[in-house]
Amino acid sequence: MTVAFTRRDALNEPLDVAGIGIGPSNLSLACLLESVPELRSRFFERRGSFDWHPGMMMPGVELQSSFLKDLVTPVLPTSRWSFISYLVAHKRLYAFLNANYDAVPRQEFARYLAWVAKGVETLRFSTDIRDVEHRDDRFVLRFDNGQEEARNLVIGTGSSPFVPDWAKPFLGGDCFHNSEAKSRLGDLKAARIVVVGGGQSGGEVVEALLGDPSSIKELTWISRRHNFEPINDTPFSNQVFSPEYVQAYLKLGGEQKQAALKNSILTSDGLSISTIHSIYRRLYALRYLEPSTLNASLSPSRDVIQMERNGNAYRLIVRNHFDGGIEVLHADAVVLATGYRFRLPDALGSIGERISLDRNGYPSLNDDYTMQWTGPRTNRLFAQNAGRYSHGIADSQLSLMAWRSATIINALLGRQHFDAEPDNAQLVWATQAASAMPHQLQAGYSDGMMSS
Image (cartoon, rainbow, N blue to C red; front, side):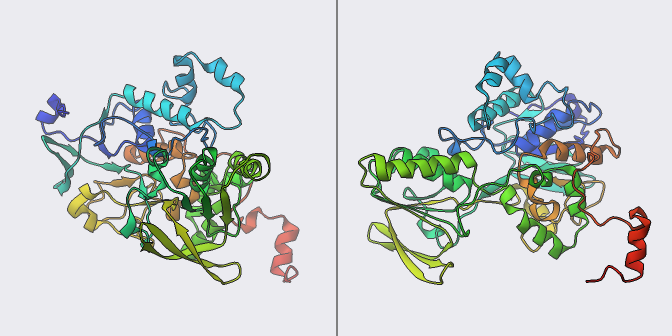
């Protein structure tokens, strides 16, 4: 693709903001920037078109958040790029409502995102950024056939599949990350399969394998967790996916943030109830109702400590944290549902060396999602999906995508263009000031009457 340069480019006037990567987060930002004409923006993606997790689009997979938490609705419900607008544009709003989904099919949401990506004018696909340099008062983005300049950057390249060190030497056709599951599972000729990872992604792989187990003799699903646990999708638990929780979380110290993140892990990384039911019922049918030779083993509290070749197969050494024992598993194929990790794109080049990282290897973020770096404050680097440790568990999810985009735009403008203030929370997270306490309670504390 040839990058189109306008007269503004010829005059060497930089963009106000350039986006690197076009995933849901930067797509959300691009949509909301349409309502801010004073900010000139453009977003770049090396892929030829928008495609959201194509390797995980197996039949029946569902979204784990409300469709109202789309690209724009939480902060700009009148936008033409809402999920409801997509349904209306495709003349299936009533059919969708009548389907009465408990959870929206992920394939439907992916089509919505692709529809938006075709309509937003500031997106540039098939444009691979080779290098980014900071020069004077701007960033210079270089492509194969040109360059673009911008005062601010937003990194929206998303997370990369995480592969444990013990599995890296064996990656290939019969050992792969679940991000490739859709394209690989159908052709996988393996009698013994081990799925590693007890979250939703692992559950979806197991569900798909159980749906057509004809060539499988042994299926083992292992997880570090104490059990194959459901997502905590209750109203109070879901308050962690709210602006008010993020603002309270930002005020915590480092150790407090780690504890809060650990305590809320199942609001994000648990299994959907529908997936749990599907797997359990399928196992029941294969064991009691259908003539099947499949030996399925679900093994929680397991941690792989070593993997090695065993002829044309694999041998996995596993520690059982339930009773401390050591087990040996044999597999012809291993599927790694081991999650994703954020990393800075290679294109940042020398700029990457100027960005401060936290102890988890993530960029150190300020409250407004700007990275801490050694460059001038007038040239800011924003990061999407990089704040799991700094901003809380919701940062890597779709839930606060629009609110985060609004926060970034407000920071770029230096004013509150979007109302990003929290709602009236049902839960009070932070300690209340003494002046807000009832008089009798204040007196009790001051007199030492409330001690235990």
